[in-house]
Image 1 (cartoon, helix red, strand yellow):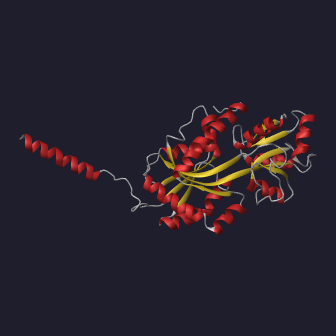
Image 2 (spheres, rainbow, N blue to C red):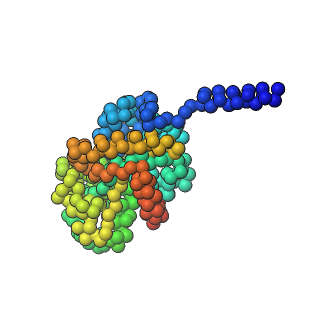
Image 3 (cartoon, one colour):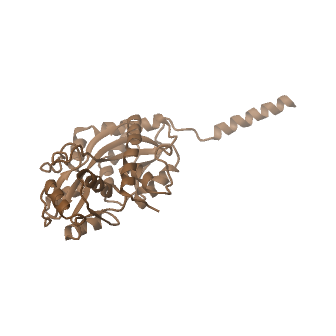
Length: 326
């Protein structure tokens, strides 16, 4: 009887193991459409970036790639959903600097941990910002802006997409680097902030190059500088802040793809390697550059190290700004 019980236990264990869902392998993945979650509304810079390569990624992997928008709370709603999703590579997060390295320092109650709840798949691009002003605003260069602000402390208003976001923190860093005093006017998103900047209710903004370039080329705004170390092809005649005399000022955001923690490394690398081939194609590189994003692929390990290095830098910026949510 004892031997029979042992055999029965073995049989039941074997059956249970066989019925358990097996972890996906690089050979079998993907087995269904891949969903990429974006924590912002459709049509924004992150959406535009993802749509450049999403279809090609689907072709490379043999399954459709569907973009799913989960906007709200600075990208935290979408990120939290992906963190809780099945770790099989079929649900991914396309995120930016704010979602992954600013929000953890900004939100007192956040539903995900960037390092523990995600595995990096690939950094896809770096996203510099541009300092733009209303065309009627007197300063026509960074030097003139700094001089004007020093003579009129607190009288230069700058708009942002919201407290604690990158468009808020970059001007805060600029203030400290140049010893000037600006007045922050937060908005609920970049669109209303841009409207008021064009209308003259605020004088200045720091915003992603694609949007800044569009308005600058139409003459609705004037671009004074970009925040990257080198000039951006989308604004080739606009100097960097370093060129404009702000020593060592380089602040660049990023875009990247992440998967839920515990997603098998082989699956992550399959996605990452497919994306690498797509992003490094000369035609795709040109499309990205024309859109204002700098191609800057990093694989799983390098992107992970990059995230860990970025978090304390932005945490300090949040602390210095005094910004806080909930």
